[in-house]
Image (cartoon, rainbow, N blue to C red):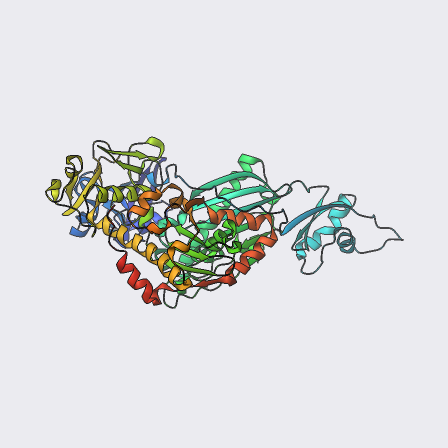
Length: 612
């Protein structure tokens, strides 16, 4: 039996049909409606709530515990835990897409412009009885290109192009190979694209390759997040069928092409004037972009299909740039140290520095690289996506309305992204909140929240009265329901504290384990580079206060922004930088933490909070 489902969004109402028993979240996904589901639809995170009118089943005890009384009273239900069994109306707020704050700037070393793709204008000798060289030979002799492995489509077009242009043409060379011939002088219409495909966000950089100058920057949320907040959830989704992998690939490729369309409209750059695209991202994201299965990355011994750099013709991936151009995938190290980390090492220059540096990229996963010009060690910590708001009761990404700063003075004060009414709390806000709760004795060193209304411990009345009960869990109130945009309290629960403890312990333990592997003390580290969006907005003092960053590193920490994007830009601007990236890949020694007793011990030692 089929039922009518009316889906109401900010843009209007769409009517669809569904078979009886169809899972509501799966139905919304199939019809391209974005509903946040950080746990991948496994009924764990409580984030896929929609207002659903017409559901036949009453909410289970589990659904009630995840949603809370206030949300249930407003008609919210978890789409992953409910099925369509009648005609119904579904209301989607779409708040997850509102004005995301995405870091695109990143510091990078200076580089001489020397890209993989080059364009050269040439005025060729017109054929005559005395000059009977083949058309291709004329071009190669004048431009210095190599004729091996030329696209046959280009070869078929050359005779007509030369004669229509009176033998005045522009040659496009890729790695010295003749790839295309264009009529007239088009050497100044030459653009390139560098992209950081993150698990949560995507950042794109458009360059004028004739000058090596930035033209425009664009960023957006990764549309794959509807399949899960972390790579494991997404891999799990793709192993369901070959169609699921294609769906995952299509989501990111469509996003890349929509960004190209944006640059066309905003900057007057035609898609066929973009000749090169360089991509960085974690190993799973690169596999998905190529349409290659990542299922073996998710299970021991965590083996990817490839970690090499790859160069493809655009059509092989499906991106719409010049058909004779190239798409470059930067190299990775392992299943969990991806091209984004190699790009970060490249952009920060730590691989060629005499001094010992530490690169920390805290995002949906946590990756750490320690080293200098003689050695590099790297690890990936199973921190989970807590720092990006997933698995946190009121956690959200860095979007408009997210609480991003919390200050514990005489009274609690907070700020939100865009100065909008609060909708939840993002990673930097969570770190501030936990650090303040520790400072004010709301939690002890074990992370335990004090008794309700401050009945335990010594704390100021302002903070004691903020300890409340939510669904049987003690919680610390950050924003009350009267002030929030959702009409519900925004709080940090005891479970949230535990999530953050696990995440911060994993990061800190990873840092200390690498130091032991290298045979150095933390005090021997000269420079600490915090990369990524979280690293750009986090309060470093509070990160140290909760033990996320070891105290020995105080005064050495700097934010380097989107180091992955900056590394992709270097690869776009210079083939030598792509070569350096490959050398970095071979130089990095990956440490598998799941097999390390040092990590297990450090993880336990770093679970508690140090007193301020």
